[in-house]
Length: 284
Ligand SMILES: [Zn+2]
Ligand SMILES: [Zn+2]
Image (cartoon, rainbow, N blue to C red; front, top):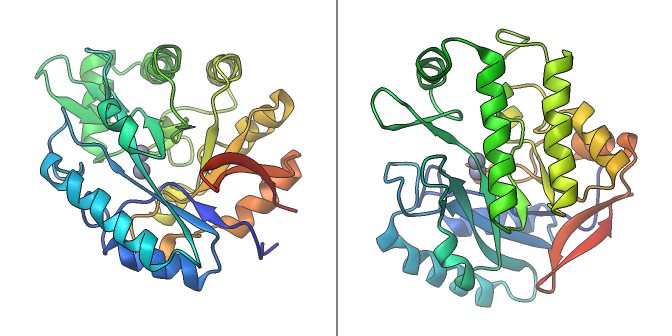
């Protein structure tokens, strides 16, 4: 089913972080696809200084460019400024929180864990070897502990901070392929996802359905999985739909299929920013 109205995406990157292309290219792509709104969510500057985060010195230019685009396309597209914030397990810092006042919204994500041996942060979302190093060194190759730790970090983040969107909440499956490390139907895994969603519900967190893993060829389904989306539907947890776009052509990647799956799971509405406020809009 192809939606003709109410299209938006609040999870996008660009050349200022680990995406490619200018912000204007994303705006033009959104316009060409009939979007109502777009939000930019570069990886927040701060503790993690590497090539996938926005540089602190680029933050003013980020805001200025969004302002410029906002004035330029004012009549045709709503443009919002956000950041994707990282939760760090050792300091319990939500990196980038200090920019909140200057933003329209925030996405909170867990991407990294601290590698005990080296004291560096390694990514769950990055190269395979970083995932494997964490699994072997921090968790003695015990995948249940590793996955459990990931979910517990998100729960800790939810209990400590408020934010607008919980990013890719079952990211741990990114390297799992067709069950290389675990079977998501196993009881222990279901118990963990269920525990997370109870926490999400309790703290009134909005969960994103993220098609970025499919867009980048890493996985064949959305974050979170259909079974988690079905649980979200049962629990009345509000969702947003995003593609975590790292290139402008991916701005609506897999959206029509995701819409179908959401409707199948029982959703009739998704949350979007409209006129500066989060609103629940119809997708059917
Ligand atoms: Zn992310
Ligand atoms: Zn992202």
